[in-house]
Amino acid sequence: MDRRTFLKAATMGTLVMGISKGAFALDTNYLVKVDPTLFAAINRVKDPANKTPLEMTHAPFITAPAEVKAGEPFAVSVSVGEKGHPMSQAHWIEYIELSIGNEPAGRADFQSKGYLQPKVTFSVMLTKESAPSGVATLVAHQRCNLHGYWEGSVNVKVV
Ligand SMILES: [Fe+2]
Image (cartoon, protein in one colour):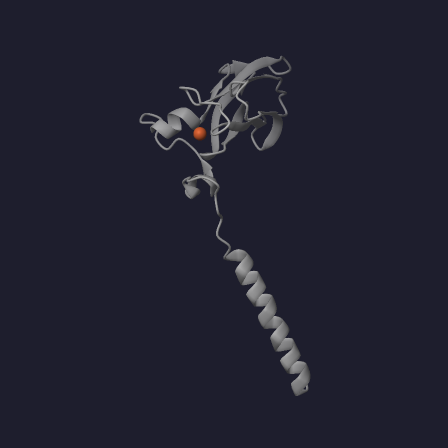
């Protein structure tokens, strides 16, 4: 490798490293003051016996039968928090999703105007194949514009 080729390659390598380092080192700037850790991971209730005020108002609260018959539809209700969550243009729930284990089943999107309460009832039908062990885990997710991503889950016995 001659000197000119070496310098050209070294300069390009430095540029690429500088660009990629800058891209990974980019700080996220939020429009309003929020706790950035709430947006860095999926939030869950840490101690169900001692929920924090944030957990009480943000963890998806799932209402479903403890046992269902395979092939028969049943209702699964998901609300945001046990105490409910406000819906205003400044603070609102963007969506509620329901999955069967890792498989997405459905989703409801909300607008920020506050016309809808963040509560959804899904009609679910499980098969024996969807619960090979005899138990299916219903997993709900929601996203709050100020308090990040939250997950809740319940197990349902499938007979
Ligand atoms: Fe919130």
